[in-house]
Structure formats: C-alpha cells, structure tokens
Image (cartoon, rainbow, N blue to C red; front, side):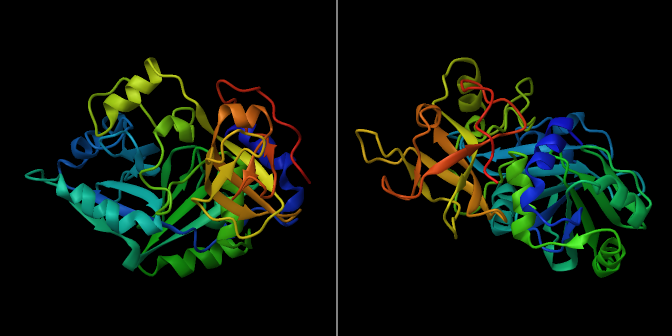
Length: 341
C-alpha cells in the first residue's frame, strides 16, 4: 500500500467507523473478462496502459478513450494469475459495463477475442481501511501486494488497487462463502464508505454521468499510473500525448468537502466572485462524510482552486473547502488546507 495514501487515510479517518478495515459487498463496479489468444494485443491497442508488459498475475490502472481523448471509462485490470483460466479482467463502473463491452466488441473484427460481462455469475467485494493486508491474510490465507492478483481457492482472485484498497473477485457461488470468511475480520460497509476511501486516496472513477467529459490528465490519471506515454497508438492517444508534451492544463482533479448532501457525479461547480456565471468545474465522485456534509472529487479550474473560490451547483451555492490529496498536483500549491473534521 502506498505510504502517502495510508497516511492520508489515517489522518482523515476520524469521520469513519472505529472498526477497520471495512468490507463492501456492493462496490458499484463490474468485471469484464477478455479472453482468447489475441486478448493481450487487442487490449494493448485499445487502452492507455501497457497491457503487453504485464506478466500473469500483474495488474495496472487503465483508461479507455474516445478519438478526441476523452475518458469513456477507467479502472483497473489484471492478467489471470497462474492456475486460473487465461485472460484479462477489467474492472470499471457498473453503469458503464454494458456500453464499454459493446464498444470494445465493435473493434474485435477478426481478432481471436471474446469479451464477457462477468456480473451475472460473480461478485466484487471491496476491502478498505487500515489492516487490509492483515484481513485478507486472516480470511483467505493470501498476501496482498499492490497491483497483484492472487488466487483464492480454485477460481477467486484478490487484487490490491494502487490506492491501497482491495477487490475480491468471486465467480459463481464463491461470493457468499468468501464474504462470510471476510466478515470475521472486517465490518460490513456500504458503497458510500467504499467511495469515501477512494476519494481520500484521490482515485477518480468515471461513471455514466461523467463519461466522455474529461481528458485523462484532468482526472490525474497520468499521476496515478494509468497512462503509458511510451507505448504505441490507442484511441485518443494523439490528443493525450499532445496535452502531456505541448499543452498546458487549466483543470485538474481535487478533493473537497461541502456542507451539502446528495451530491451527484456530474454536478457543476461555480466561482462566486468570477465575472462569468459559467461553470468552472464538475463533480466526478462524492460520498457522505461522517463528520459533516459530503466529500468529493471534482475536476476544477486551477485558478478557481488556488483562489479558494468554488461553490456547488450555482454561484451562490454551498462553498467548497479543499481537502488534501496524498500526491502533489502539478501547477498548484503542494499542500491544501487541513481537512475539515
């Protein structure tokens, strides 16, 4: 687990339950199985990450982009560890799974590749908080390592995300069995708490409400290792590379707290003191905070963030307070004000 992310989660954990870690039986994510002898080459040519470089059991972050360089979906993927059916598992937002499966299938053509939605016969259990590694070892007898998929029993897999959380992928009837084993070492959590940990880690997830809105760098996905700038072509690669080497980003993703409830992805941000009433940011993800209000990740204009001048929904909406992220965002002050609560 990344030490900076651990520290950030620890500092902000006062607003979470005392019992950690937490297990979430429904993370609002889905898994796609990509199999066949051309699966690696096919995905390497479609995604922003270096799929070809992965050994069995290794994983990484990824983005899938439009020709204009906008992120259609993102998530993590891993090659099957030795002993399990050969292929790649892509994890992404559940409300995008069918659309992305169909879009990828359009480009298979004559390649020997099958793309299957694993949702009807599988479960994705989330694990987050301090003690994730210890809980997985006690429950399943496996040792988690960042971006590694380790087999559990005969068909299940445990995968540690780059941000320190973990996913337990359990096909068939294994889901309830593994969840029961995990319940002895972690408290059950809602998807709100699962998203809270992702927001603390500064790990954005594109959903249906925000698909095709952002260039990957504005989501900080270049900082999070989801883009390989040395690989060959993939959809949107020219735009993303030009932005990296020739462009100047005016927006990035930041974490905020706001004294409001029911904040939804896609909600707009405004600068109250600005001369224009046009929006200057968009909410990517949000979750209730146990201290008060809501924590959220949003893509926002750098100038408005530096001026501490952002409001939710309208120029006279609830004021946003910047929270720290566990990594530096280029073009901004390296430290944000102390997080509320």
